[in-house]
Image (tube, rainbow, N blue to C red; front, top):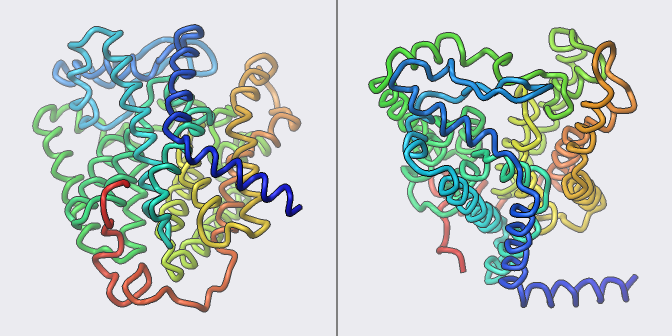
Length: 422
């Protein structure tokens, strides 16, 4: 065992010393793959095609027609998102695609660097090299790769949230980052729980103010579309897609496949939701007490993905911060942390959801969902719950020292970053 450990450390040091080359090689391989096996970035085409309709009144009538199980892709984001996407409509498609994917790869690096910044104790001078290595590996995790292939906005919003929380020195900056991200797509709004859990009251207030301000701006630009979205469409999950498909990795999706379509209103759903909430709160409380800033962020983001009715597998780019926390954070050598990390790696690097989706498309047409397909389809939910338990495992009686997340001087400055990325 000692020999294996020594060899692993030697390999790690060798890779760390060549982190820049590893990322360059990974990006080059991704570009080659994208050129030789091009994907259809359907979500990006929806952003680009729908945005001009913000002014004509047909924003939420626009749709891209595809095939089963989601034959129609309408625009489902708040009007402020369409306002940001308007410039895409005036650029050639190839330019938009290259710029979008290039920005998304850069955003992945911001997510890895910001996550390492939020570690407590911090990773020190190794942040840069570790961030490069994690970005190189992250390009091949299914949620990241799916985001790139579909032209999704997940990585960009993740970079705004993580970068804002890790690198912004002021409450205004941290709050504005969360508020803007939540105004583009509702799921990042769970980042507000991070600000509340870490007692950053001014940052939380700024998040609310920023969100309200940009929403008001979009309302002034297109009052009709804003009224339609916020009074009816915001709660209409049927426009997003079917809950039952394995592409939906939320808790409700997993239970629907296991127990049937009526699960959402059953005692089983409420019991499962209560257990997941208990695990998430336990993990959150322990992370707060131990000054584990990244643990707090991972807990709230994974919980948001679990309880959202529909969380497509590409929404789970938060697996990257989760894996960084499990690999480098407190209690990383515990068995539960290693098991959770290994399962995340197996599920995401092994592209489990696309494999199950292929089987689903070929075999699931009507009747009960096959159990042999439903159980593996709980993979992301299982990984999230294991992560909660790994975050919660450890001494809960020892408080963080003063000046850190749980200390007396951390009320408003808990997440003030130290310096820029090394």
